[in-house]
Image 1 (cartoon, one colour):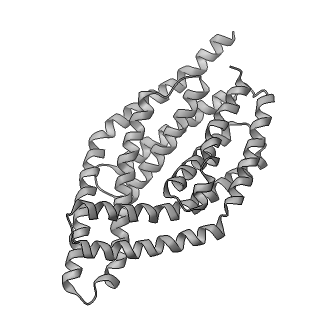
Image 2 (image 1 turned 30 degrees about the horizontal axis):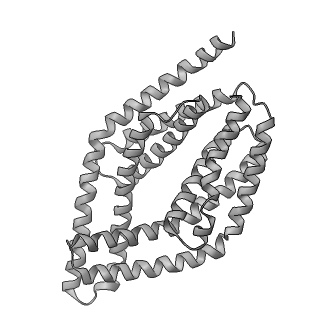
Image 3 (image 1 turned 180 degrees about the vertical axis):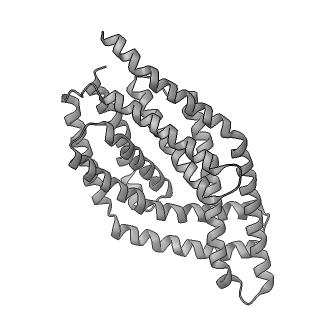
Length: 297
């Protein structure tokens, strides 16, 4: 497969999920928001290696980032409502207290969805998708420079180094902000690694699947911590002046904190596995250019 065709395929693969759920997105579907948001992140990750004019790349990246941010706030509230429903189904906590929490979060979620339709109309996303499709058509006929694969290697190497630094900063202590940094760095590294594999004509590796599993662990931990913070913010309005209700809300918070500690312990045990993947990726980026030079000579 030609390099120009491969670049086109890399973009097209990430563009399709960005557009395929627009109708459901307009209806406020949580899964559609999640998939569209993930697709916007993946598209942002690939833009720098498409060798677009800087002004075009910057404009597309800025618009994609707007989609990522706007969908993020609404999806976050939707996830929290779903987590409270999970707690209801578990039967561990007082159902009346959970209904109060769910009602408050549900109201905030409905307001956020209404604002989203004003701030980010589906038509804006459709226009952005058409611009990206136009960029893709240009890539089919435009031969990339010899340096585009080197740019991919450099990106993987940088993402790997950033993830290792985030792991070092996180240490073994439960610090919410530093774990969030690890989660973001891990996600960006996985996206970059997937691009490198696809650009080389390879299938997804066990390493990318392992990274996804660790990302899911940290994602669950992040969502639970957000729920804890939200419940604490709601607690005075939901419980005052009933001390018994206050204590039942405390019980919910303590239960969520226990699960956070279990997930954190799992993450700490798995940090070595993540480091090993970073090391393998870094070694691969060192050997790949030599192999390409040898093939070209």
